[in-house]
Image (tube, rainbow, N blue to C red; front, side, top):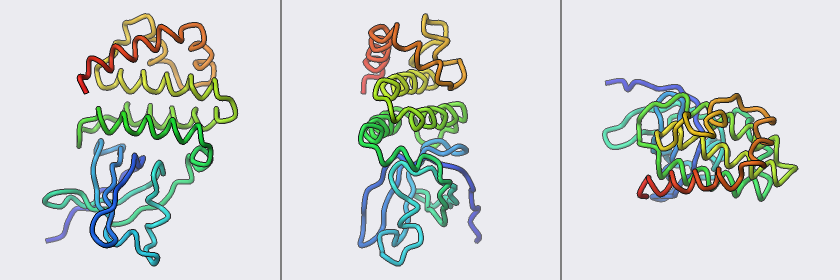
Length: 195
């Protein structure tokens, strides 16, 4: 029986090794939501996927649904977000955002607006790597938007425009005058998650 191959884009949130040369990945995908998928023999030097399936890579990925988990059959890099992973502060923020997504996003629930906002946010993070303040502001707005898409934050609030406006650098400047209030909103929402 032939398996259906799913083609999608995804952002690799992280992975862990298992078996002799295999690896499991958490991937936020455009079409399938958050999934956990395995790649066989990916840690072998000869593996073509070894340098494609890296933490925080934005990839085009082909997947097959197995009985217990997804399997990655092939993947290619999109060359997006190459710069961001080479900067310590930006990498730390990506790591924080990835942990939050793994913690809060339900598995295998398609959420295209969330996916697109995460990609938009990381694009802005990458453009902001030269300036620590812009980087911090971008992270705050991205976290706010993640919480909004998951139902922990309302667009009716005082900060609603920050979750609804397009991802542009002007939106980063708005954070400066509301920083303490935004942090309070984020912390209140995170406390609500009970996680």
